[in-house]
Image 1 (cartoon, one colour):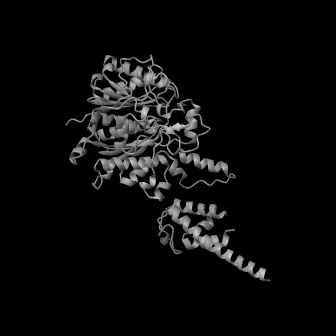
Image 2 (cartoon, helix red, strand yellow):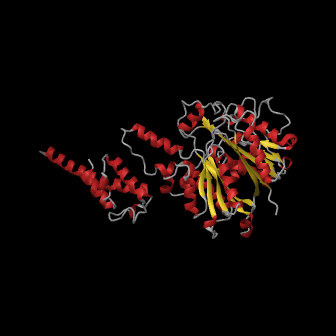
Length: 415
Length: 96
């Protein structure tokens, strides 16, 4: 099978609107959480979130185009543009038939659905749905629009597996390249669910932190007082290429994808398996696929959402898979800073993992105040401060409601 | 008598305003929805051939006219509204 490398990155996150700003925020240990500005959250249980800030789609496309897209698609178009430019693809004569787009979004156009429904229910029963309602709302439209924008005629679709969505997208793109189906992909994912039904829906499940008096410390994975995740939004884009294709055009290579794993908990719609059964299996599968052993991994960017059960079962799973080697790892949850970008989490965390390899820096798990005795203190959870470390290979986990588990292994590129 | 004359003039002016109001509202809806320049929106300009509208844009335009002028345009009438001028003529004749 062919080798697959990452040659371009793009990010729009609560920490900053480019890969550079995002990474600087991660290394500095900044929180992207703040009171909600997108709607009046006065009567909501949770009144803060990790919003993308200072973003206006009309700075990136004309108003007519912007108006026909849901915010999740704005994030897709803008992050893909950054990645495309970053990869040095602008102006190149690419073979469009060998280039594809696989995008991830857990929810799609929730904002559009909400506002169109609202207008209908507030009316007299006469349907006045906008003709762009359906194409704005469907969660595959970002992939379609990206293919139109770049003239990519290869495989094109969206993956939906809740918070694992963009990892699934990356894994599919990786597979199609290594199997020889295509040479290049725009992949990643985006999500824009900080709106009334998004916040209220997760609130109703008691999934969100309700630390309204101190939003910036609310996402505290592995802390004794963690009380749920912080809703985030944004997008992450990656350009994946076959190694041959990248070398032939003299591309700068960030990292290689060594392998990937997939599994299901087959346990509960939202709760993780208490012993981390699916999480154990997915990391085992990823390691086997990559041909690497536990001792070859230096960093795990965990799913680590800051929920009481999820954090616990994931660390159990790491100990199941890595045994004694778990004590040599750096583990961190960048969701402590970005909040949880749902379907875009896998993409932005892939970028964090790749940058960790390139820069030799482990982004921290911020907001650690009180140890939880449930965690083995021998595991280095990279609390509060970034750590310098040569990262030969990093594993990035994302798990989704429904029990979908995904894990991708990135490694330093060596000719 | 003086009074009445004044009222007649006022009414005439209002009607004039209403007419040009319709045209200018139609133009501004088209500029907004199709993202075109105001000077492209000439009476002869066709939504699809000259102003870059696709079939969905055209449906949206008709819906916007219905909303703005509080009327319902039947499909068989909507099919005949393909230029800026046709839209203005139809709305001037039918808007309340």
